[in-house]
Amino acid sequence: MTRPIRVEIDLSAIKHNYLVSRKKTQDRAAFAVIKANAYGHGSLEVAQALSGIADGFAMLNLEDALALRKAGIRQPLALLEGPFEKSETILMAAHGIAGAIHSEHQIAWLADSHFGSAHFEAWLKVNSGMNRLGFVPRQIRLAAQQLQNLPGVNLTTIMTHFASADDARGVEAQWGQFEPVARESGLAICAANSAAIFRHPETHGDRVRPGITLYGCSPFEGETGRDLGLLPAMTLSADIIAIQHLQPGDMVGYGCRFTADKPMRLGIVACGYADGYPRIVPNGTPVSIAGMRSGTVGRVSMDMLAVDLTHIPTARIGSRVVLWGEDIPLEQVAAAAGTLSYELMCAVTLRVPKVYHE
Image (cartoon, rainbow, N blue to C red; front, side, top):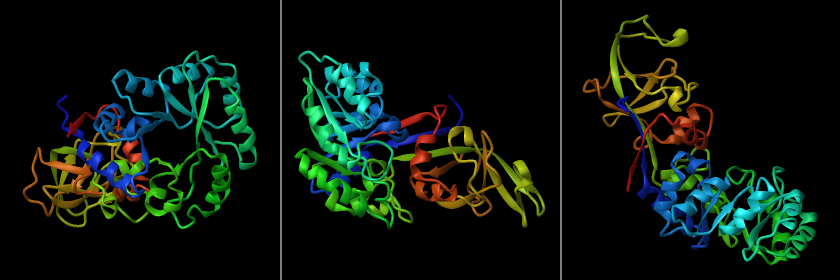
């Protein structure tokens, strides 16, 4: 591929971020969350990079977990939404893949399955107030008893997920619902996501689930990963493929959303919304060119966007433009787009080649 765009993944940064996240919990067991293709970073590559240090991996799809097993990853694996059909329970048990059990129909599948000499490791999910998945607290004792009575099922962990660990509402209400039933169960406790790892130590329990912090971003509004001691793991960059010279009154891009009020020099960059860069960003969304900060100009199109080169005379055809990563915090681009860094990481499309660095 000759189109000059790439997403670079710094695996050493991911290792650093994992260790920083786990250290915040006094080195409790940390299951690295690598769902959604490791937030766009590559689940196999991230798992291989962390294989020597991670306590386990949390995922979504059984097929992704089986791919890790086939590649030789032997750490504990846990599926955060558990099995999606009865047949998956057999494969999960056979390959040592734990799963969240959040609904009665999953218990029924386990009751109707035969695991031979294998065991299905169950993580009992509590709905402590987010109201997505899980049994409400009054149902936990019965659900736990049902699982513990099933042959071939090993109930090891009780878990929940926080809705607002990253904002002023915090976790007090949900923790108040979860903590009593979790303690009563006698199971290993797994509750803390990235935000809770850094802000709510009372929730650390026995196992934590670092997600966004693995990849160098902060879960907190108004902060960047560097504020937390993290390193950016993903850098999206593309090259300038054309230069335009504007006069006052000249307009730029679809919808003529930008009108020059002075002579300007523009760079046309080989990146657009079909690559995963958000179309919705406003004029002036930050970029970096030759170590100098600049901004976008006009509306992002499918395959290209424009940046201001007026104050960067050394920029030319082939100059690299960092759209987020090294010098441009992803959190700032996400804020300009009115979204979260999570979404932009996951949105980078398959046509953008990945380059990995150790």
